[in-house]
Amino acid sequence: MRVLFNGRAKHDYLDDALTLLSGWTREGEQIRRTMVLDDTQHAALTERVKVVADALRLRPEISRRADRTHIRVGHGDGEPLTEGEVLLAARIEDAFRAVTDAPA
Image (cartoon, rainbow, N blue to C red; front, top):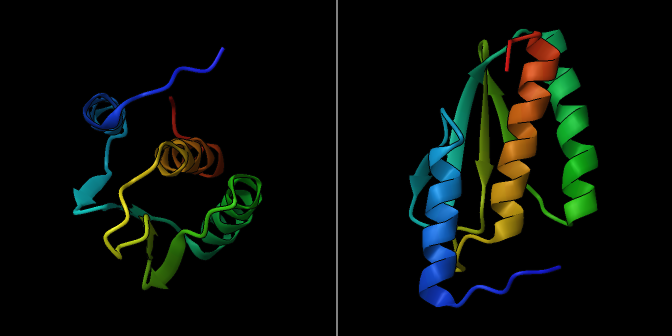
């Protein structure tokens, strides 16, 4: 069964979901995360994210500087953050734990 959310309830729902994603920060209508990964972990994470992002038809921005992987999800052009983008962030967290063998 699918639940429909009106404007305010949807916003509250997304905010609640974001509080469960540690390390993610919200900047306007985008969410961001920086992860410390080596080159092998970065490559593995990027491949996992690509599979999920393709399935959700989303395009996160992933960049690498030194030993840090920076991820940004959202449009940044005034479009509101969607449930799919928050779901993608959650799946990115799953992938991060998988490639770093970090406990859940």
